[in-house]
Every structure is written in C-alpha cells, then in structure tokens.
Image (cartoon, rainbow, N blue to C red; front, side, top):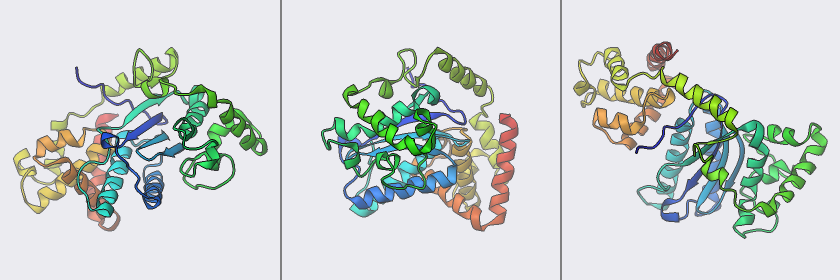
Length: 315
C-alpha cells in the first residue's frame, strides 16, 4: 500500500523530524548550525511560515512549524536541499545527508502547541546531554526564557497558552517545561493518532482536517494538464519538446518545477519522470527561476500568469 499523501491547509501546525542518513551526523560544527539558522530565517521571510520551536541535535532535528499558503513539502524541500548542498560543499562530500523523507505529524495547535514546544525543548535532557534545557545552546528554549533573542522565532502563541501577562510568561513557561521532565518519550508526537499517523488531535480536529483534505482533493490539477499549460505558454509542441535540450525547454522546465512545488501540483519526483530529468536538476532549475524572477520582469510575468491560471483551476 502506498504512503498516504501529506495533509496541508493554511495555518496547519506540524511536528517535523529530520534524521541523519543511517543515523549519522547532520551537524559537524557550530558553523553548520549557524548556517541552518540562516536557511530557516530566509525560509520564514520567503514562504511566510512560523517557527514555534526547534532543537538541533547532532544527528537529527526537531521543528514545530506552522505553514501559511505554501505547503510544508515546498518549505522542507528548500530547507533540506539548501542545507545538504552546504554540508556537501563544506565537507567535500556527495549524496544524501538525511534519511529518506522527513517525518511530519499535523498537530492540533489549540490543544498541543505548548506541550509540543516543551517536548522539543526537552530533547537534549532525554538524550542525557544536559541537566537543564537552558544549558543547551541549539534549541529555542533560551529564547522562550528571555535569555536570547531570535528574530525569526515565534514565541508569543505558545507563551500565550500559559499566561496572558507578558511579564510572567517566561517564568511560567520555564516552570511548565520543568514540570514535563518526568514525561519521557511521548510516542504521539512521533506517530500521531492510532487512526491516522499523520494527525494528533481529537476526533473533531481529525474530522476537520480530513474533510478539508477531501474538499481540496477535488481541486487538484492533473499533472498532464499542468504540463500542457506549460507547453502552450512556451510554444512547445509536445511533452517530448519540453524534455528537449533547447534554452526555451530548460526555462519551461524550471518554471514547471517551481509552480509544481509552490502550488502543490505534484512532487519533483513525479515531474522528473515526465520530463526525463533527475530531481536535483529540477530543484536547481526551480531555484534559478526564483532568482530570475527578481531581476527579469518577463520571467516574473510568465510565472505570475501561469500561477493565476492554476489558481483559477484550483479554486
């Protein structure tokens, strides 16, 4: 049986876990962690998502991300791809850094946001790395306790779950985290609900999410129709021409890769099979189009027109 598709709607909160390939390191020095911070910051600015909590361990990463209009898949594709390229360049290595696709559980923010943040912050204690979460420098805990400032981190929502008075919020949060030390591993933050491992919440939350997913599934643009639109826009006669070696075909593939991920049309793996290119090539092509949009009004207009057409089909 194939894997269930990712669930997405604007405002969804996810517990995301990224693990190193074969449990190997993903951070080799502090410069790597600082670079990951930079990529998170730039992702927040570009895709307008919120980071409610994070913890960068040696061989894995925990994130509490709340998306906007851009899907988690698109956000993680950019973050994982950019960081992997950084490490491969710095360490003069090739290949995958992370183990398979990331794990993500959609969490009911109203019921679990504060608990999820606490759980993420306590990860170094569960690994016997520190005795106090404030001793670990590579999580968001110190920012929640008022000991450092991270501009791209969102703390007010989780703090607001515990205290309406800003002056008391940090103290109450520190006590809330201390109260959770004895909890240990909580499988539900990793595996979701028994009925659906993609979700963590009560039946009302699950019904709302699944109803929304079903409603949105009826608005999916078929991949072949999407590629017909791309071919028409760039005067390419067929899919074979789109897979060709011309400069126009290369631009068209980059635009297709960008729109496919930004609008959730299909994965780059599926697109790669259609246009006879590998995923990394398409990912790089999409990034080049994003860069060109900023300096080339013609490309920006082409992407905007195609995006509007897709929005109408998905409405």
